[in-house]
Image (cartoon, rainbow, N blue to C red; front, top):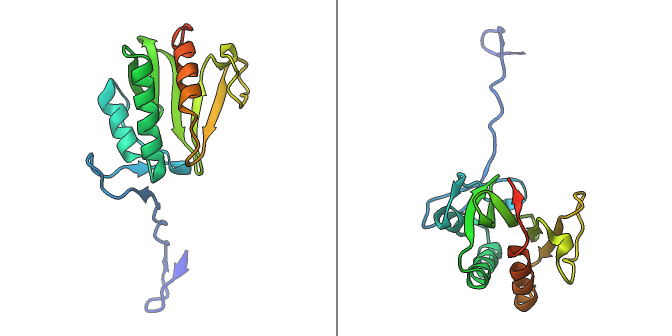
Length: 161
């Protein structure tokens, strides 16, 4: 409590304002960015929430995630899509997912939920035995290898979430 100069009476300090990062307006409106620049998009099933997430991804990450989405859709034409936990998920069956995307501060993280079964193995390990990650930095995407992993991953029974 602080005393005011005029009255000398104690007053409570006003609460600090919460600062949130906002994107420049997109076709979908503006989106709140979470830690690391990951867009906060309402959860939902289908292509529309995934496209809203991609549209809200900051900077070069929006272009990269649009390319990833196009490769996944071209490689697995009947893929199911959803946004859960502020991340696009891709799968073959209802609520069984083989891949997820997430924006980090300096890269886009691709999670292959059964990645330990892919050949060659995606480069980054996880605390979870079967999960493997591919961290993509600006200008870094081997489309042919990514498509091969997507094709393999789509044939493995997905992770129930």
